[in-house]
Length: 96
Image (cartoon, rainbow, N blue to C red; front, side, top):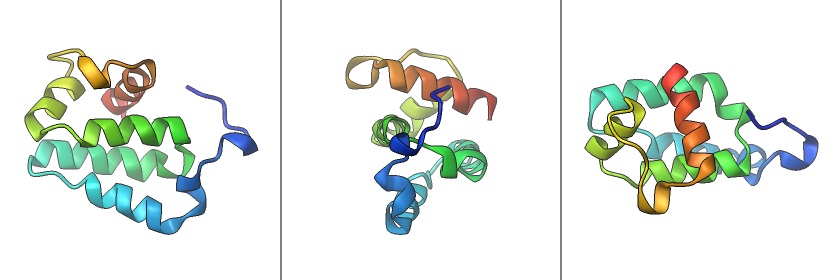
């Protein structure tokens, strides 16, 4: 987990509209994804750094089935989402 410092707080934290947009994007067609993401955001939304928000945004760009496969560790991230920050966020999602 990335240590929180005042300088690591993101625009996401200072702008309620950005937080609301992220939460809205986290609403998914698959109930399982919706439940996992909602539970994660309820627990960690106020702690997310810019890097973590970027990783979550990349995951939210995926289809519901691709996202579910990653969250359940059926598959590993590939291509544009095969980044260290995405791997770290997936670990947090899996235990949330």
